[in-house]
Length: 203
Image (tube, rainbow, N blue to C red; front, side, top):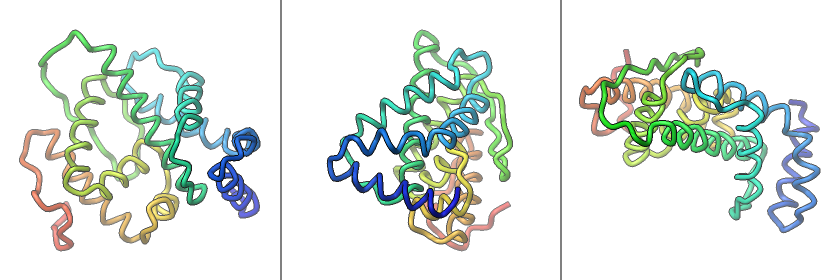
């Protein structure tokens, strides 16, 4: 996205945060293509056989953002970070509703590729990943945010760093650790108790 467009988005976010509801109407055309790209990625990585469409996810995300009462927007990266969180919650709620009557069952491994390759998973796997990510957030919220932005939101390392106000190298370290932590949690292997340790040997 060009610097001028990014700057305009930041200005509109500030105006919206200050109570100008018209700013949201001006903002959406500028962010629509990026939100649609994110939504399309969410749908592709969502549970196989689900009925949630890109347009539906995009519409529900818009409604969640429009109803967001915390308008302390920092910049465009922060905005897309909030959008990624909203999409994750919508996807999880959708998976949960489709399996509300199902209990137990074997969990299959969810592969978190370092290059964010697309995967096709079942709704149970989406819920298992969400549960593991919530557990990670209780221990180290920043690392959970990194996974949410990169894996669910499809943000680059640079965009994730901007959204979280950390360095790109920190994003890379957090991603490596969180990916290993989550895979161990999903496999039933006790994950490290202190994911903040900088000397952890990643594999």
